[in-house]
Length: 364
Image 1 (spheres, one colour):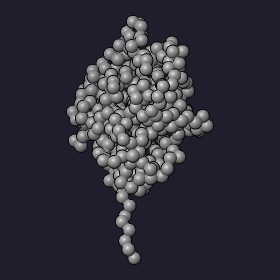
Image 2: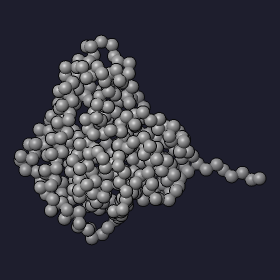
Image 3: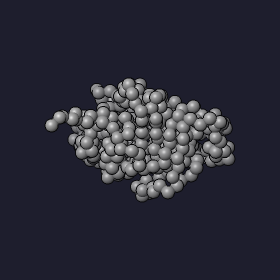
Image 4: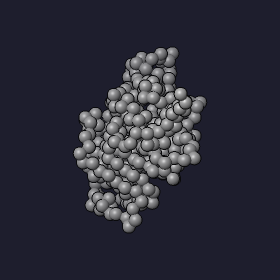
C-alpha cells in the first residue's frame, strides 16, 4: 500500500511540518500559558460553566481558540490536496485485489446514514468521512498530525487492545463498532489471532481502505457496512464488542442504542470495551474540552459527558460497568488518573462492562 507521506513533494512536506509544529506549540506552550493566566485570576472555578465564562475573558484565549481552529483547517487543506492530487493511483490501489484474500468486504449502498452523521463535517474535515472514495485517505493522513505523530503505527489502539481488553483462552468473535479505516480493528486481530474479527462502519470509503490495508498486511478481517445501532449480526454471538472514539460523535439516544446493541451481541460472559473521553473533574480542563468540541465540529461531547453510561450498561443487562482513565502515551489503562500533564491532551477513558453468565439451571 502507498503511504502518501512517502510520496510528498518538498512543498507538501514543509506544509505538514509547519502544521505539526504549530499544533505542538499550541498544546505544549500556548495551553500552559493559558492555564497560568487563568490561575492568576483567583480561586479555581467550581463548575465547568463558570470556568468557561472565565476562560473567555482571558487575554490569551482569542489566540488559543484561533490557533486551534486555524491549524485544523490548514491540516485538512494540506491532507486533502496531497490525497486528491494522487486520486487516480489511490483509487486504482483500492480496486486492486490481492491474489489470495484473507478477509472480506461487504458494502451496502442502501444503508441509511442518519442526519446526525451527515449534517456535520466532523473534525472540520470537508465533506466528512463518507462523501468521497478518498475521504478515508484524507482522514488517515490528517489523523497522524492531529495525534502529534504519537499514534503512528496505531500505538493508541495497540495500547487499548493490550491493556483494556480481557484475556480469553477461547475467543471466537470480536466486533469493532465504528472501525473507520481500520486503525482500531487490526490490533484486535493481533490480540485475538484465532477469532473472527468484524469491523463495522457507516462509511463505505473507510471500509474500502480498511479492507485494502488489512489485506496488504495479511490480516484476516471481515469488514461490513452497517449501523452500529442495528448491526444485523446474531444475538449472543460475540465474545468482545469494542469501539474507539465513536460514541462522542453520536447524540445521546444513538449512544444508548449502540450500547444496547453491543449488549445484545455479547454472549454470556462476554465483554464490552469502548475507548472514549470522560470529564477529568477539573472544571477549567473540562471547559477547554467543550470549547475544543465546538471549534472542531463535534457537537455531541455534551451528550457523552452528560450521560451516565454505566447506568445505560446496567439497563442493557450488563454488569460491573465502570470508567478507567487511559494514558495514550505509554501506560494505557491506569486507575490513578491521567497524571500530572502540562500540555493540552484528550481525557481518554475506557468504558468496561460484562455480560453475566447464564444462571445455572436447577432441577425442579
